[in-house]
Image (cartoon, rainbow, N blue to C red; front, top):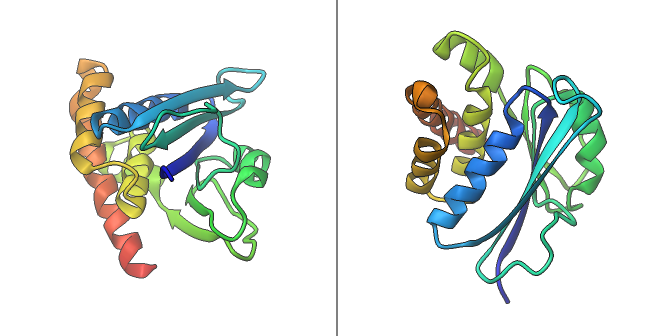
Length: 184
């Protein structure tokens, strides 16, 4: 049986959720996986709840949408509240930005808080890059894709003027993910 990982990233429009989903999909492709990705914006592109779905498999993806997320990466409370019901019960992993999300923990799910936005502000000088920090930390924690594949996907996807900042965000995220693994 093929291993399939269903990932949902969510937040509000303007946080780079769709970009993070695109990068994760490209990284999985670099790792020779089969990938499907979709995204959705709320009523307002900026400020409304949005999500990106990525299905990663060892074999062709038969159904391209997330049915039950193995992993939910949440960057904003409203989006978290909207999509938490789509996480696999008793096996799901919730990775969330502790600056914007305060989950009501449910039994059987693993919750991992990360200071993605706070770290982006402190180390990168602003909120830009928080999406890449939390994505990289999630990759480090879960092993969804290799570090090399994620770095390559960021380098080829991000606009050249922001490439250096985002590659720095990748390294910061890997470090946050390593710390979270040690605590967990």
